[in-house]
Amino acid sequence: MKRMTDRSVAAGALLALLLTGCDGARSPSPSESGPPVAASPIPVPPSPSPSATPPKPDLAACPKLERSTEDGLLERDKPLPIPSAFAGIMTADMNHFAVATLSGKTICVDVRWAEHIESIRPSRDQRFLGIEWMGYEAFGFVVVDRAGRGDQIETGTAPVWSSSGRRLAAVDLSESGFGELNAFAVWDVTPAGFKQVATVSDDPLPRGDWRMGPWRGETCVSLSLVPSDREPEQASDMAKAPRDPWFAAAANSWKPQPGTCPQQ
Image (cartoon, rainbow, N blue to C red):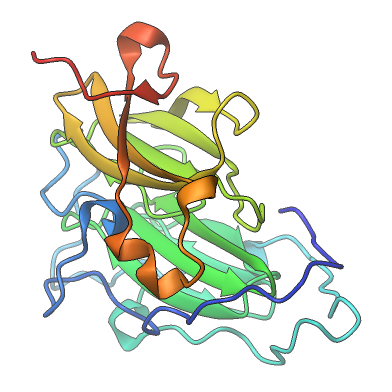
């Protein structure tokens, strides 16, 4: 995880704390959506039966890490809280989230730079956990695969999954560079884990407020952009700003371009 020590304080209010991503009162927008809520079509190990003892994560299996306060800029002085809904499969110390896999192993997520957890979003089949975090001039979104190899990927912002659950894409491109991805990226999901198939940095792309849109099939995903020269002065006005349509398609090596996904 990158470290930032001399950046100015990021503006804007934090999102609601500790959303669980379950079937609650608020349904996330496409750009906020977490792992697919439909059961994954990819074969995964069966979840434990209600009578079985659920797997417990083992913090002792996590590597020993040192955490700097970045000269007092990081204020957290205790482990990040685990929502009660996830207490059976997650635990934490100052440096880690330990997540139990479906087979009883432990995945260690480095959270040293996280000051707050904004949401934890599970897939309905429990294979994936999406962890949205905020820190001092930093933010990210980690997707943990509790099956296969036990992969974890940093998508910067909440990814958008294709309807089949076999692909996901995320965009994290901003002037500040506070996000942990700083690119547009696409991953395939296999029984073994994630396979990154494309990454496009902001160097060849215009700067501004990028957002994900829905997928069209499995080979094209929608994006939108408010260019920096049209960004409103107040962040609260961004929702009203007209957005330019963009898309990224497998036929063009997933490079974002203006326009809309071709009809299929």
